Length: 349
Image (cartoon, rainbow, N blue to C red; front, side, top):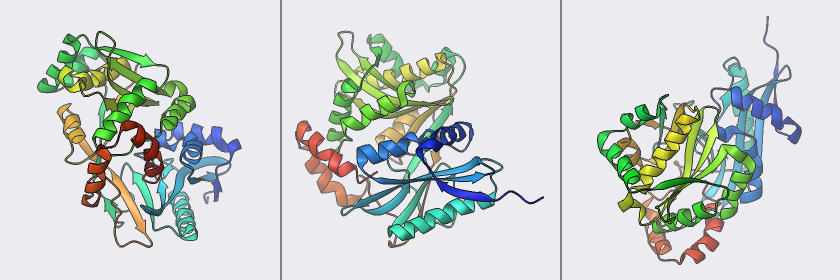
């Protein structure tokens, strides 16, 4: 018997519960496929979105969240999904090739209609081996062991010593109700690295939108001085530390190491099973830090369909053409950087 026909539709508000129910049960889907990213992308960053899905016999079998980023400085793109490390098509095992092809055809038609320079899928695994790809990024994902002490012992010896140093220094972890302390160290941290900060409104929107699935953990010294903070997402049985910042004093006190241990310890006690350390650029400090925790890098398959470009865009701090900008940005007062930065970073995605 022939399969029932599939229909491509655009997400409407009435479809959100069905969309999210699909995302939560589909193994290919990630936290960044949730429907809430549509409103966040539109309201905070003012980018047009196109959340597409395939339906068969009234059931969603595949989804593809897309957003259009149009910038004079950084180009014109259709991406799944800006400000998210994972994206692309998420499909049920029995969705069938037809459903995936229909979604991709719809995305291609939309990209051509909008006149974008490229279409980008931020896949966890490759879908189009023949497409140009960005090989700069990897992710780090590892199982959380059932017992807290086993997770401590799984950390390589030198890194484990840093965690124990943080404990010995009397550092304390707190779950914050808002993003205030987090944003202060995050904004200062990214300024020191010469990159614009995302707006504070974005982080508060994440907290308000995702509720208990978005958590801020802040580390202080015994006197209450803020040293380090991380904003983390929770999805199914995964914990995803996503944005972080550290005070200059954090390094000597091992506050960064202690922070991630506390996050892992708390996640283990709550029954989470996978720790997603997130995306890093190959050859950078964060890349080495995560490897030192015993996590193995997994290449991310960022695939591009090029329409009006000769190659994959390099809108990232590793691009030598941004060297002077980065050096100049580091010298800005933090208040000025926080005021200007959101207007720039919204177009980077």
